[in-house]
Amino acid sequence: MCGLSFRKRLGNIGLALCLLVGTCVIAGARLLWWGGEGEGGCHTLVITAGYGTDPLLKTPVAPGSEFVLRYTHSQTGGPMELWFTVNPQCRIVLREVRAKVLRPEIEDLAEYAQEVVMKDGWTIYRGMEQVMDPLVIRVRVSEGEQSLVLGGREIPLRSLADGGTRLEIRVR
Image 1: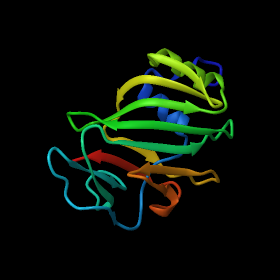
Image 2 (image 1 turned 135 degrees about the vertical axis):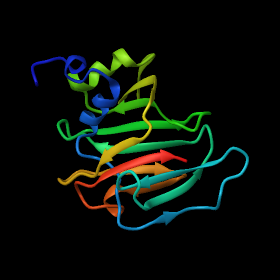
Image 3 (image 1 turned 180 degrees about the horizontal axis):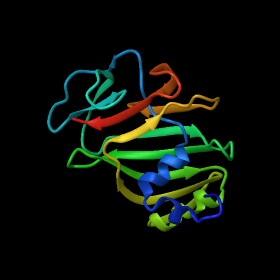
């Protein structure tokens, strides 16, 4: 598998991100709630430990809301960020990927981006526009930081769930 190109191995960006994120996803043992019900086109971002389970986290969002998944890449040891937006149809859309350390698997993301720029030591792949709904992540079992930045708060995934837990993020 390592000898094949990233695109040939994975076939689409959704699977590619699963590999890049490695064993990350959000799941949890407690419910977190920030703010009240949204108004005027607002909806709720919900994180569960699988479809149909009780929410671990709920927070109001509106079309245009952003959140970031931050983690340490399991192979390069470098920081990675996946930037998401809630689109007007209330779906989660991957907008850009940011990487500090490059490897061929990460560099292959350029074919999915509309623009690739370098800024402050980061390689930024912009214009991905890939619907990821639901966004599925697995909380890492091994060492390595994983967090969700949402509404000005950074939430370590390990604070929501044990390592190995499969999390699903949706907008309802």
